[in-house]
Length: 328
Picture 1 (tube, one colour):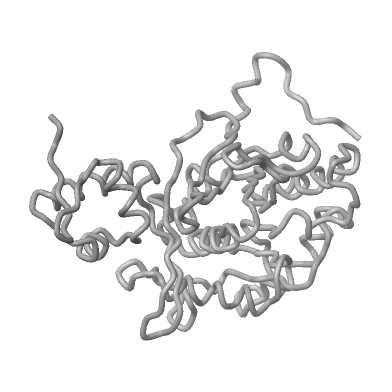
Picture 2 (spheres, one colour):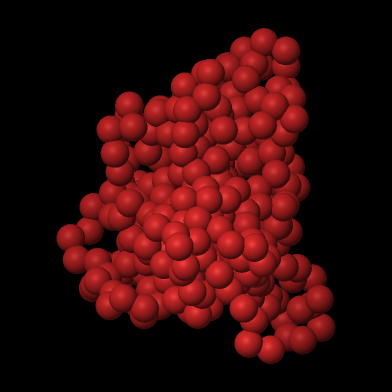
């Protein structure tokens, strides 16, 4: 079998860097790995990313370069859990941001297909795996089905049949299967993964053999603030061929509206920036004496948090009201 090669160095100019599908997050023909601890919100993030790719819905300030069908391998939880997350995310999207469907009778997210039945990637050749999933995308226009433009695996542990994640030889076979989809067939692949046990305050990494991290073209980590699980930070550990972008700080807010429960992923300040902004606001409020209940309500913080802020400022309480005098 002939091997693909380029004669050095005259033909190197013909080798081009793959274009972005979702700028900064997913590049064409590559593997993106997102590592997060359990219950951090990686499924919400992965699902929201899929909804953006199928509909061009903005994703933390960027939009998909093109609308493509997405296969989401939903293997980490029951089907009803994934269905619930999807509906909550849809309810949380403001009406002004809702994308238009391709056709009037379709949902904007009609090209998002959730695959419930587990199919370990390392038990197939890449071509056979795609042949199996083509039937998931059957429609009137393409009765035979069509290839997904992005595949998301949730999670890495459920997407392979190998026994030892710490064995480089076994994990090489698994990562070669992912490369068969992304590098050979040209279908960008996102893999959601867990970290090993990590001491508090230490950076997290992908669990298992070093080849797992080494084979990913883009690596992101998702972490929650220690005292505020809804405050999340998405950071780049590696992005092949690029400088690492700034971290994305966002909040995962939940609530209920007229349509039911919703989830909103809203970009915002980092925990430190948010604290600084609240302290500045607190100083402004304390230019006149205030009660604790008024400060908590205005700043939308708890009593313990307010106590920490007041102590840090050196505020004084007299007759049930708080006073603050600048030291400068």
